[in-house]
Amino acid sequence: MKFYLLFPYLAYLALAIWPLPTTYEHGDTVLWLSEDTSFDWAGAGDVRSFTVQDFNDFNFRTKSNAHANKQESAQDGYRRRRKRDVEAPSGDEMIEYAIYSAKRTIFTKNFVPWKFHPRNWTESDPADGVYISSISIEMLEDDPEDIAKPLAGTVNESYKLELTEDGDVSITANSSVGILRGLTTFTQLFYQHSAGGAYTPLAPVTISDAPRFSHRGINLDVSRNYFSPKDLERTMDALAYNKMNRFHLHVTDGQSWPLEIPSLPSLSQKGAYRPDLVYTADNFADLQYYAALQGVELITEIDMPGHTSSIALSYPELIAAYNVQPDWDTYCAEPPCGTLKLNSTAVYDFLEALWDDLLPRVYPFSAYFHTGGDEVNKHAYEEDDTVESSDYAVLQPLMQKFIDRNHEQIRAAGLTPIVWEEMLLEWNLTLGEDVIVQSWRSDKAVAQIVGKGHKALAGNYQYWYLDCGKGQWLNFDPSVSGQYWPYQDYCAPFHNWRLAYSYDPLGSVPESAQHLVLGGEAHMWAEQTDPVNVDRMIWPRGSAVAEILWSGAKDDQGRNRSQIDAAPRLSEMRERLVARGVGAEPIQMPYCTMQGTVCQLGYHR
Ligand SMILES: *[C@@H]1O[C@H](CO)[C@@H](O)[C@H](O)[C@H]1NC(C)=O
Ligand SMILES: *[C@@H]1O[C@H](CO)[C@@H](O)[C@H](O)[C@H]1NC(C)=O
Ligand SMILES: *[C@@H]1O[C@H](CO)[C@@H](O)[C@H](O)[C@H]1NC(C)=O
Ligand SMILES: *[C@@H]1O[C@H](CO)[C@@H](O)[C@H](O)[C@H]1NC(C)=O
Ligand SMILES: *[C@@H]1O[C@H](CO)[C@@H](O)[C@H](O)[C@H]1NC(C)=O
Ligand SMILES: *[C@@H]1O[C@H](CO)[C@@H](O)[C@H](O)[C@H]1NC(C)=O
Image 1 (cartoon, rainbow, N blue to C red):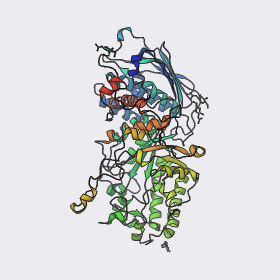
Image 2 (spheres, protein in one colour):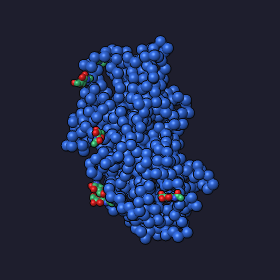
Image 3 (tube, rainbow, N blue to C red):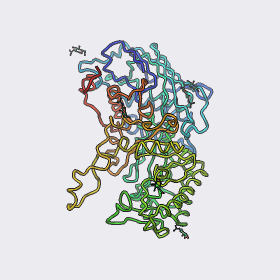
C-alpha cells in the first residue's frame, strides 16, 4: 500500500478505512459533502438519482427528532417492502438500501475525530469549503442469479473508488455486493464537523479493493443466552460495516431451543427459556432478509447429534443420556447432557419433519445449512437404548448413516452442508465433496481438512474464540475449589485484539491447498454473554478478524501485519461503531491516538 502524505502532521490521522483496502492512495485536500448531493446510480440500464428525500419509503414511520426511531422506521420499512417470507432482496434493492445507509452513516452516525489529532488541533473551516459535486455508482456486469445467497467465490465483491480533488466521486464494481462494499468504504472517508456537516480531509482518493477470503463471518450462539432480533440486527449491521459477509447463527443447543418450527411447535414452546424468548418464523425470515440486504448470508446451524438436550423438553424419547448428573462430564462437554439417539426410526422421522419445515424457509436466503457435529461424546451412547455401546466400531457406521441422511435431505432442498471438523477428523466419516468443514480446534486440523480435499473454514479457538478468558461459568464445591483456583476457563487467557489479529487462517496450509480455505469465522459462544455485553465482547475484536479475512494476514510485502499501522485505524473503526450505536470497547486511550506513535514498545532501527 502506498501513502502520499504531503504534511507530516497528517501522520496523526488514522487514515480511515477498516479493513485495509488492497491499494489506497490519498491526498490531504478537504472536501465537504452536502445532504442534497445525489447518488447517481447506473443500475440495470437506466441512471437513477437518489437524495435523502427518496428514502421516504424506508422512513414511513419517521419521527425526525429521535435517533432510535429513525433506525427502527428504516427496519420497519424494509419489512413492509419484503415480499412475504419467500424472496431475497434483488441487487437493486441492496444498492438502494446501501445508499440510504451510507447517507445515514455519514450525516447522522458519524463522529468528530478529536481523538486522532493533538490537543491544539483546529478543524478545517466550513466557510471556505469546496463541496463534492457528483457521486456516480456504476455496475460493470450483471449480477449472478444468486447474488443474495451466493456460494463462496461466485460473487465478485471487488470495487474501485475514485474521489477527485475537484469533488467527483465514482464507485464501480462488478456486482451489487461490490457496490455495497465500495459505499461502506466511502462513508469511512468522512468525519463529522463539530459545527455540523461532513467532510473528508483525504482528497484525492484512489482505492482499488477486493477481499482475500470469500467467507468472512461471525458465529453467534443464541441458545446459551437469548438475543432479541434487534440485537441480531445491530450485530449484522456492525458485521456488514466490517465488510464481513457471513452471519452464522448457532441457533439451538442443549440449553435452549429458541427457533420456532411451526410444524413441531412444542420444540420452541417447551425448549425456549421462556415461551416468548423465541424467533418466530416471521422473525427468522426478517433476519435472513435483513442480512441479505447488506450482502451478508445468514447461515443457520442446528447442531447435532450432540448439543441437542433441549429437544428432550418436547420429545424426551429422542434423546439419550439426558441430563446425567452428577458426573455429567463423562457424557458431554456441558450440562445438560443429551444426544439424539443414533439408531432410532423415531429420530429419523423427527429429522425428516424438522428439515421439511425449516430448509424451504432457509433456501431463499442462503446457499448453506450447518448441521453441527462438534463434541459428540461416545459415552452418551452407552445410555442410548437403540445402541447401548460406546465402541466406535459400532457407532461409526451409524453416525455415517445419520450424517448421510441429513446431508441428502439438505442437498435435496438445494443447500450445501457445513459440519464441524470432528465429523471428518474424529469420526472419520466420508463426506460429500460439496461439504464444507468448519475447524475450531487447531491449525493442524485445517491442514488435515484440506489435505482430504475438503473446503475448510478456519477459526482456531486459541485466537478467534471471543468468549475465552472470562473465567469459569461452572461453580466448584468447596471440597475441590482449591484445585481449580483461579478458575480460568479452558481457553484462557482473554484473546485480545492483537492475538486475534496475529492469526493467519493459512498458517499451516501448504500453498497448493490454500484455495480450499474459504475463510473463517470468529466465534461468540454465549455462556457468559447476553445482550448487555455482546457488543463489547464482539467489537472491536471482530473487526480485527474482519481485517485478516478481507485484507489477509500478511501485508503487501509478505510480512505479518503491523499492530502499529492497525491500532489507530482500529481505534477509529471503534469510534465509527460507537457512532452507529454499537457498544464496542476502546483499545487505547486518547493520549495514544492523539499522539500517533508514542504508545509503542520496540522500534524498528
Ligand atoms: C500545536 O501543535 C503543534 C504541532 O503538533 C506544535 O508544534 C505546537 O507547539 C502546538 N501549539 C500549542 C500552542 O500547543
Ligand atoms: C473480481 O474482480 C477482480 C478485479 O477487481 C479480479 O481480479 C478477480 O479475478 C475477480 N474475481 C472473480 C471471482 O471473478
Ligand atoms: C471486474 O472484473 C474484471 C475481471 O473479471 C476486472 O478486470 C475488473 O477490474 C473488475 N472491476 C472492478 C471494479 O472490480
Ligand atoms: C439398530 O436397530 C436395529 C433395529 O432395532 C437393530 O436390529 C440393530 O441391532 C441396531 N444396531 C445396533 C448397532 O445396535
Ligand atoms: C478415526 O481415526 C483415528 C485415527 O486413525 C482414530 O484414532 C479414531 O479412533 C477413529 N475414529 C473412529 C470413530 O473410528
Ligand atoms: C508472523 O506470524 C506468525 C503467526 O501467524 C508467527 O508464527 C511468525 O513468527 C510471525 N513472523 C514474524 C517475522 O514475526
